[in-house]
Image 1 (cartoon, rainbow, N blue to C red):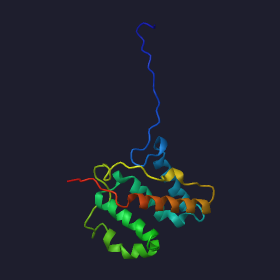
Image 2 (image 1 turned 180 degrees about the vertical axis):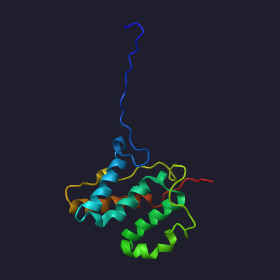
Image 3 (image 1 turned 45 degrees about the vertical axis):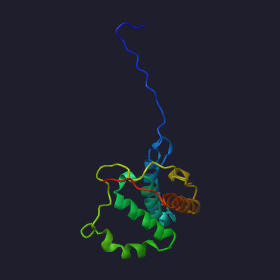
Image 4 (image 1 turned 120 degrees about the horizontal axis):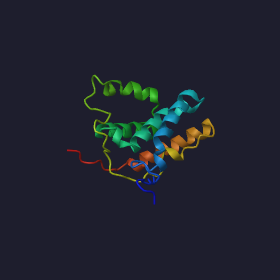
Length: 158
């Protein structure tokens, strides 16, 4: 024993994301990598609207209750109704204009608006080998997130 000295042992543990369950909280850094890929990579930008909506659904602490419902509806319109992003932008121009909108999208308190859930797929399930595989996997992840979220109960935030 060393006199007057302390031995500090640092324990490293892998923490999973409390919202999507991704190992080592790797979801946020992966999301940012994907945004870069979608803006720089040939062919990858075609699924940008799905990447953002699926990620936000699975990370409800970034949104208000109304914002989460809005993102889920967007994902439904993209995937089920097969509306293209350009059409949705025109359709929702006034709805999402911050000067005209009657609800907030971004969370003020950072608290999740959905109960903890197990997601079938997360952003970590998306492969990045090439644009074709990437787009296919983002589509599968987005569909899975939408299906998992349907019928989901939102927390009562009153």
